[in-house]
Length: 407
Image (tube, rainbow, N blue to C red; front, side):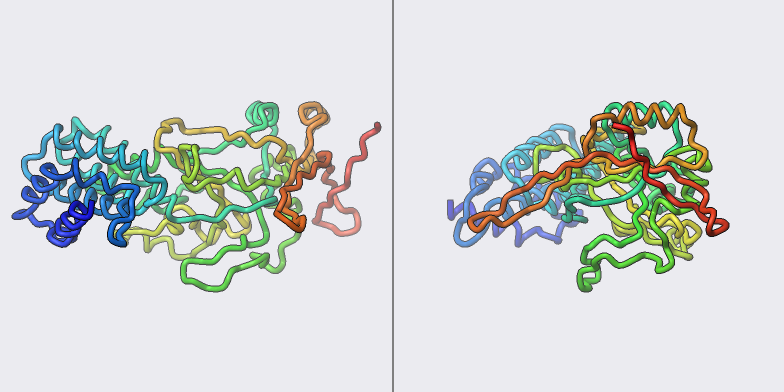
């Protein structure tokens, strides 16, 4: 196996980041003549080298060379696909390698022409999946946030099913939401395919949270913990603009959620999607995205115009490379902690919601050190209901009164 590893190193040194029109075909031929022996290093440490990483780098070189040769054939692309799929099945991590492989595979399909656009889009979907997997590795236990909703059959159905509805950014009321859509909106054919891959797979759920998530930002600053987004903010359920814009001018409701860590995932388990929470940042300079050639993940999905700053938005980003629907639902059993009824919410809607949530509990989890190991302790409590009312003591404000149910 040491011989194979030595040959792998020679191949990588000869071609890595050195693929040109003149040597691309030779790089393809060298791979096809040797890969059946080289891939045996996967899963082993050989001469201090990680076989998973080294053979992955070989595949990246081969896929880059394949995207550069003329003519390119379906048969050779099929060989690349089989090796990528086998590599994925054996290697749990190495997301940066898988990202590069699917990006190059998309370019290969594109090179064959428009008849292969669907295959190119599918490859770019996996490319985006691994890109998003790499962009965030943080999950939060007992994450509290709020959602303002109109009373409708869609709300009632989601409450009955105990699910969370997520939508494509193309359905949002802010036409400039998600700058990635603008960046990919040009005449470049590859950009069009990647844009389609984004729009097919990306789904978002929007919440209100006045405190910043505790995370380390991209510049490597200290961890941010429980800082208020705007010092003058009152409790989330008192946000009058949110009631007006998203809860049918107080005819709807505000739901308080407490989400467990398993709501999010970063591709490390059996789930076929990536999902994570991140705060939205607001900017007065959206025009810059018309001039850029690239964009990072944070700016692509978590930036909005400054006019929306009052929302204090927390966003759940979801991406499934196999999804083609404009809306999807995630199961969120026992995550509702409280419901706030708007000032003008009808008695009929209130009773419908109470009946749906009757006997439901809000579950939360905490970890406790027992002296020998850490145990997960489950806690449960009844869902609380509140009625929003005009505050007679302070003109122009509302308050929340807890509803005490008769037992």
